[in-house]
Image (cartoon, rainbow, N blue to C red; front, side, top):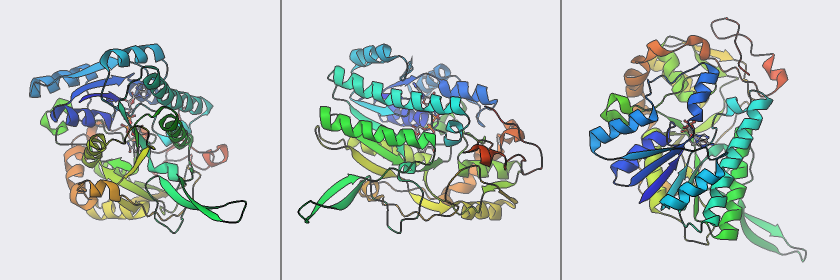
Length: 406
Ligand SMILES: NC(=O)c1ccc[n+]([C@@H]2O[C@H](COP(=O)([O-])OP(=O)(O)OC[C@H]3O[C@@H](n4cnc5c(N)ncnc54)[C@H](O)[C@@H]3O)[C@@H](O)[C@H]2O)c1
């Protein structure tokens, strides 16, 4: 297949591009490299030393003889460029990662809120609009988030996208319907993913676009089979307070002797998936497209759920780290349960990498190896969900006054 990977320079996009190229597909990355600019804005860098995208693709070619092509295009702003590219290359499938994906970054200031909404919604809409205009029947696979469901305890398993409901008619009968599971975003970033869902629903219904939406859990780990092949193929690893995801942050905190930062009671339960499983799921989704004219296919792309304080305690037990109990910068339920259905990927052959099985390797191989690159002042999470909450998070776990970027 000819596959366009939108956002293929990022944390999930890069290993996905390698995986699909390795499987024999003709892979084209479209990326505006905004994620690298955001590192510069925040004064942080990936824990792992990342080369330029051109250098990464050159090394991949030298290692494997296979080519991954790179095109510098902003999906949100360069509509004509995007449309012309799609018209010329006519991909069979498109994987859409090209969005601003950090909830804390999206809540930093009014400017960051505007940027996240403009970038994410325009990127998704430009893509859908161009597919219709060009009459291009490419299968679109989007990376959404488990966060669209919200994190409140419901006492029932979260289904894969659609909820069966009974609606009482005016004549008093009950008719059955399946509706999109009620959206319940917890940040501006999550809100854009909820809006994406509506765009997909409309374009599948109105124009028959073939769309798969993957509601992904928090991705952990760094390496996949392909990124291990050469030091310059290494994946990015974010550890900072905005882009670092909870488990990866605990790993690096343990490696540098920094207290594990638990916000609130740590009673938040979240869904997780290893990066290797994430790229496998995307391949499975590509191989199982919905039929033209059918509704959006939705998968829950996660393999296990954990409570944040249990994760911290597990890693503290393995490494002897302390735990710092900090005020929560987010506005969210202090405790929640989360039960998630993921039968579809399991039924299609996914064999999950479990956290217990993969964790120690990650600590030793990646976190300790590159610990010398960490800027400790960038570890705390400083983006607060409201101005009132901001007043409560002014010290880091080592007692220093926090710097904030906005
Ligand atoms: N990382 C996770 O834990 C996680 C969890 C759930 C869902 N997701 C979703 O998966 C996708 C990829 O996440 P990631 O962790 O790889 O993020 P990332 O920030 O590392 O990668 C996103 C890539 O998209 C590019 N990009 C952003 N806006 C663009 C635009 N307008 N035009 C072109 N390129 C653009 C960035 O430069 C970057 O290379 C995101 O949509 C995210 O919402 C990620």
